[in-house]
Length: 125
Image: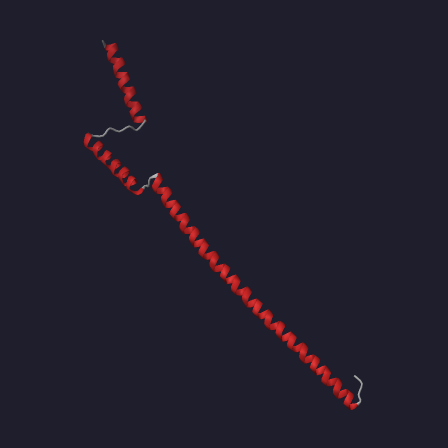
């Protein structure tokens, strides 16, 4: 009988040692219920904050549409800026071309007048 008691006692000591090693703690039923309620509250909060796959895809598509619209608006703005600058450059080029034509005509007229004066005064040019 003492041999059986010794074996049982050895098993109990082994189990206690194992539990101490693994840091297993026992809780009361109330503590267990409290912990379960905390876990359920956290899970519930996660459910409230998370989205379904369909909601995620819908939001993603909405964001993509918005980004495409914003990008399109920005591209239109920059395109208009480029067009305005090209128009300004063309207008400036036309003014310069007109001035050059005007100066060329004025120079021809001056050359003609200088030749007339030179012929009239007898000077060679």
